[in-house]
Length: 225
Ligand code: AMP
Image (cartoon, rainbow, N blue to C red; front, side):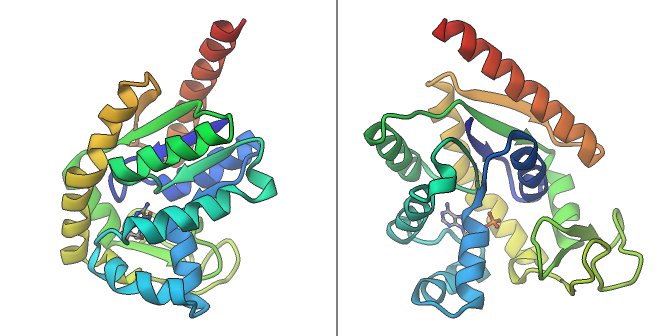
């Protein structure tokens, strides 16, 4: 399946994407993770992206789209992928459509994770992430690690993302409303959107997401038959 995941910062996109990608045997492609990897390894692309990311603003489209397409070109994405954090505005959505059309493929669904706004700030400001694996996510109140600052899963160091502080989170939410929310309507016009609640235990959200995607796959299958 070819899926796009959307939702405000703090909806749990990264966590859900990791589980869904595993269940569906498709690669999890996160542009945020790709940027962070570039920053860590000190590439030019990382240097270009860093200031935008630290402030919670979008990295310019020309940098982002090229990076996303390079990743989609890799062999493991040939049969399907789960895009997390891309596209993030209508220009990127149109660029992705053009890319897919030129490859003779199309999206199967857009999964929209819904979460109330006041929950978002609480979730993000307390979030701590493992340096080894961004899918290992903890929270200072909701999901404390057994040992403070240490990942339960792999022993990695837990840290707070520079862009997870309260002021930056508020800007990221504003950017989400202004730039990213309109792509939900864009994809609704293509009849691709399934919306689920991102509240409750992680496993419940994953189950809801899997059911919604399987329903979509069945509908597509019938449509094609
Ligand atoms: P994320 O890990 O998805 O929350 O992304 C972290 C940051 O990376 C965002 O706040 C942006 O600065 C940047 N970023 C990630 N994906 C994109 C994108 N598709 N377009 C522009 N900037 C992005």
